[in-house]
Structure formats: C-alpha cells, structure tokens
Length: 297
Image (cartoon, rainbow, N blue to C red):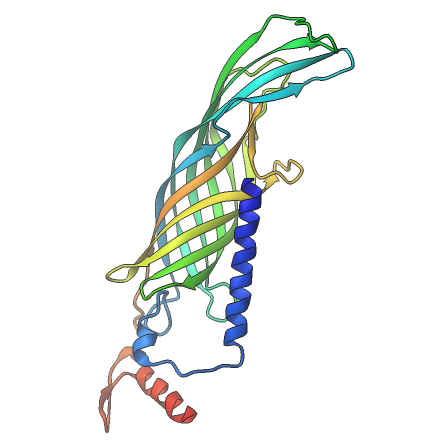
C-alpha cells in the first residue's frame, strides 16, 4: 500500500515536471527586475549560489496497528502459527549541511548534502505455537514474547531537488536522494517467537529515498521547508527490493519529519552597485533586463 502511494506520487511529480518543461519550451519572455528579485531560491548575482542549511526533526517507525496472523517454519507435518504486532516509537533526527544551486539544469533546481543523526525505535509483541498438520493439534506450549530496539545512526545524505512554485511565497519540493550510515549504538533487547530468527538490518545501512516538502519564503534571507522522507529502496542490506526494515519478526517503515532552515547569502559583488544613467540611478541587472525587453518589442 505504502509503496503504491510512493510510486503514484513520483509519477505525478514526473508528469508535472515534463508538462511544465513542454509549456516553457521555445518561449523566451523577458523577466522584469522586480520578478528577478522575488525569486524563491537564491539567484545570481544578488545571492551566492551555495550556503548552509540545518534541520531538526523526528522519526517514526510505521507498522500495521493491529496483530497480524502469520505462519512460519511450515512442513508437511507441522507449522508455527503466530500473531505478531510491531509497534513504532518516535525518535530524534538532526542534520546540517550545504546546498548548491543548479542554474543550468532543466529538471532539478539545486542539490544538497549533509551529515545527520537519526534514531529508529520500536518494539514487537508476539505469540504463537507449533501445531500438527492437518489435525492442528498443539505440539508445544504457547509462546508469548516481546522485544524492543533502538538503533542510533550517523549518516551521510545527498539529494536532488525539484521546485514547483504554487504561490508568491510558497512551493512544493520533490526530492530524490541517497543516504548511508553506521549504527554506532544498536540496542536490541528481548526476543521474538522461536520459529523466527532475531532479524535486524545490521550496523551498516544504505537506502534510496524520496522526500516531499512544503517551502515557505520567510522575511529576510531564509526559507523554511517542513518535509517528510521515507525510503523507496533498501540498497544495503538488499532485501529483494524492499524499502522497509526488519526487526524481530516484523517490518517497519522509517518516516523522517524534518524542519529545514535554508539560508540565502547575499553576494558581495560590484554588480549590485547602482549606475548613473540618463534615466537616473539604475542597477546593472535592471539595465540588462531593460535591454532584453527592448529587443523583444
């Protein structure tokens, strides 16, 4: 279900981007000086094309909210019937990094890279027993187990970001990227049912992820971007294309909620110095835009 939703979002994202490029192909309209200075993202020459960002946030391990009936270790004469319930818990998240604008790329407006800390926490409750087949007579006493985990990762992240402007001060951001890290503090206590191995993703972790954000242009030279991120493919460990993570006998989908602060740095350049002309003081960029407008008349 979650994978279908993610694929649908990505298809809509690609279709919108291709349609926007098609509409803009072959049309070259002059841009006024005022519009040039009201861009949402940093543009030359008024701003430097790179800078810092940081983002506090939280994580949550999404699982089904009810017990699931599952069968393990099934043969012609016996099987293990189990009821398993994974329980997600909130954790902490924080990142700091850099961004760089991509003025000559038609699809992605900017890239960013960062280092981050994230904690993934959850628990599992399970019960089950071996029964005979086909009589379904209990062979061993009922097991009742519980376990908890809390893995703390140090990670590196890389994203390519596409912007869809929806108003004067707001935009929707689609990002696709990769993350990889090391669990410097892996805690896993308790047990799951005996018919299942004590599963966990291990210390090393690498994933392809998708991020959806909502950008807000604030007063001053900064942006605020609340976002939600989730994996779309587990690369290491690779589990036949799965994007969720296994702990004990349950599967969990990591969700990362972040609040990114994006700082735009004004450029120190002589291009921003007013020039005296016959029409009065004008900015060099304003003069260039006026020339473009005169040429298209």
